[in-house]
Length: 311
Ligand code: DP6
Image (cartoon, rainbow, N blue to C red; front, side):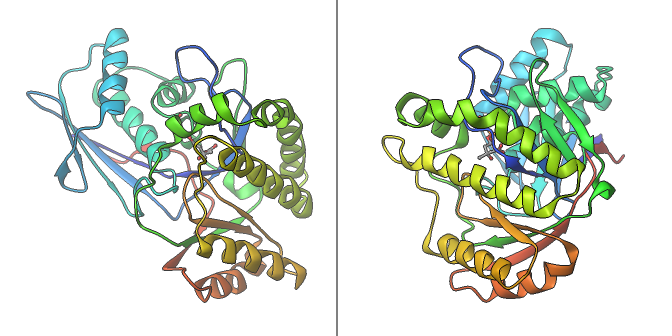
């Protein structure tokens, strides 16, 4: 048996849209931070046929089945029992597929002796879920052309940002990311502008991270998130991941910032708000968000390491 741990990551410059070719390549450069406070644990054992057990329940996951088939096109991988648990809501906009595929390729690589280095693991994780490519690494991570293997930009201790996740729903999302981004590519009138401006946002965010410039990172990351949600909202049929609680949390983050706190929000394909802050503001942010109507609970996290085998 081989066990691996991986953490979800939160994109500060988002991936929303794929290239029109096989291999699950993002249309735009994107970058993220890896969170220490949320964890996926995945165990891989030899079995007589493939079985996938999520939180103790045998599940049929077509995306996982297709990915294993592709992996077996290159490597000799025996039938496997894959057991996985997340200590956070699954498929609810908290990047469970990112940590899931990252933990899985890392576990299979060791279990089956595939001999992949981290970059190659990142490439295989990307084929499962492109955001998973980033969870192979810790700290600040970029996913950029031409290789589309994630690149570690800076370790987690380069800039000890913290994240407060305001959970507003534990329900799985109604439209998954892959389907949603394809809908946006085909129907949003603003999709081309989104693709065109991505490199500029990526460059500005990278510069802010290198220079530890919080106001600059806050400005570009918050705007990039709102641009992505504009693409979602203008897709047909519309993709609306916001709830009244998500909007209330955004307002709360803006007023905290006006009151002098170093904080900005970001949001993915789900109603949870992720408030990224400097450690001096974390307690105030957590307290304010936990009191915001509709917030079920808050999770505090520092930045963490990449995916790794633990046994
Ligand atoms: C909104 O990586 O889940 O979280 O490659 O189709 O599996 P697939 O999509 P996925 O999309 C993540 C979208 C996002 C933004 C991001 O993480 O960059």
